[in-house]
Structure formats: structure tokens, C-alpha cells
Length: 119
Image (cartoon, rainbow, N blue to C red; front, top):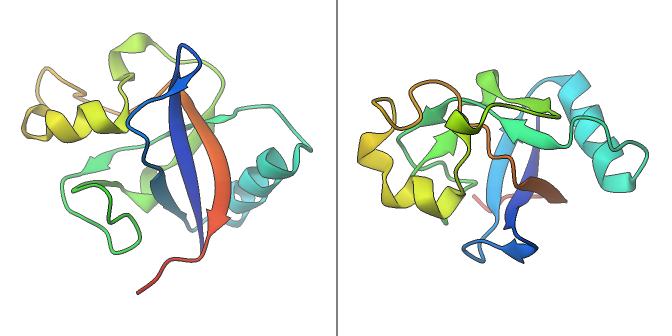
């Protein structure tokens, strides 16, 4: 298990100013995240997954988190799933309906660091 933070960049600006932290449980995904951070790869740099409408202890800045079992990395996705973490936070009650009915695919997501969460 490992934890990584990402920021959402839109038009060259970091949206919301807060990092979003994810929990990875899959060794292959952990290795990919570390390769992205080290610059060893630029392939599939964006994070996606299913939103859980509960706060996770490792992601205290938001009242939701990504289901660790659903997380994956991608290059491109349709814009239907694109939204900043701050926008998702502001519209969390609408997630799962017309807004983000499936996976959250934040096109502006960019890993920033590996983190050790405080518990």
C-alpha cells in the first residue's frame, strides 16, 4: 500500500490549491506512480477512479475519496468525467447522477509526490 498526492492543473494554474491524496494497493500501479514521479515515464499520467462519498483519513482536505480498488492511470478520456477535486467537493451530492455517473477522470490531474499519511 502506498499513498500519492495529485494536483489538478487547468490552463496552467493549480485549481483549488489543495492536493488530493489517493491510496494505491496494486504493486503495478504503485510502481507506475513512482516512475511518473521520477520522470522514468510520462505514459498514462492522469488518475481515474470511482468516487466514494466519505472522507478518508489520508485525504482530510476533502469529504470524499477514490475507491482504492477502482484507481487506474490513463492518457486520454472523454470529458464527461473531467472535474477538479474542488468542483467535485462543491457538487458531491450530485455525483452518481447526471454529474459523474461513472468514473471520475480528472484530465488535469498530475501526481506531485508520494506521501506518508498521518493517522
